[in-house]
Length: 68
Ligand SMILES: [Zn+2]
Image: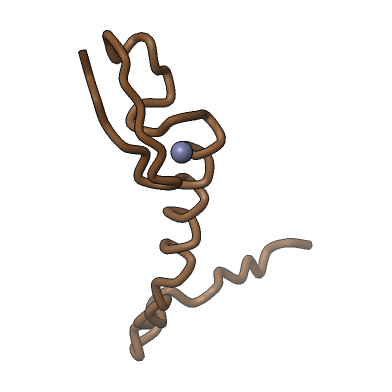
């Protein structure tokens, strides 16, 4: 017997096996998606560090002169 509490809605659940609760450790698919959404929100919250561009700029765009 597996007993737990949904980390999203705090609803307790008890199942014989994890197989009986596909959304484990959440009580339902809905809570599982809510948790997933929170993870995505958190990844969005991480401030994007500006890309350090090489001041020497050896990554300059190619200019094909012989494009006649
Ligand atoms: Zn839940």
